[in-house]
Image (cartoon, rainbow, N blue to C red; front, side, top):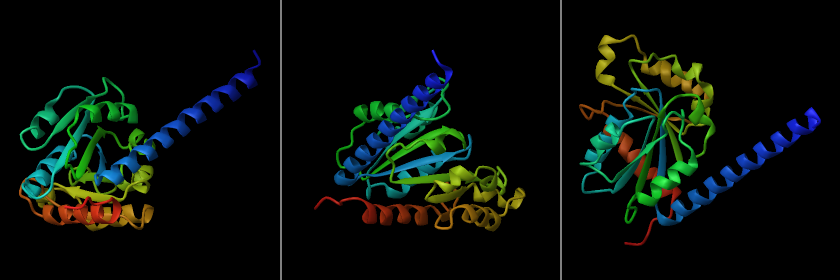
Length: 229
């Protein structure tokens, strides 16, 4: 077989697969919009505090707003187990893949009770490269950056921040002890994505969490169809 023909067919097949994934993501996002569910994809490096942020969000909203979570990990259900006492949660284990695929998200959705849910969070695999290229039908993509990682992270991983709608800086209680400038980190991120919303908070103490939660409530009102009471 001609090598050029083989390469051409491979490119066409890959394009078809990507087009189908984008179509399905858009279709699923529209379904969430019509059901009044705001989908938030949390992306970050490992250990940035995504699970702690979800715990703090659930506690902030207790009795006010209903949320559910899909937790992505390479292995174990440890993060899901932390969240189960607070919210409906389903574990997505990739077994080695460095990002979540929409097909795996859909499998998790089939097991997750979504009646009356207002917010669906997807806690992505800890990775700042691969997840940037995969649409999981989210309305918002939120980059989580901890103060222990360094304030130059946005410039090192521009695609992730370019495709994000918000930046959450976590572990602000450690600012007196680490060489991290929240101003520099936010400025760096906004040179890449000027419209980026930014939040500084500590999930353990609760400082700044209410502003983050208010942002999500307002985003839901702007983005999805709110069912009549």
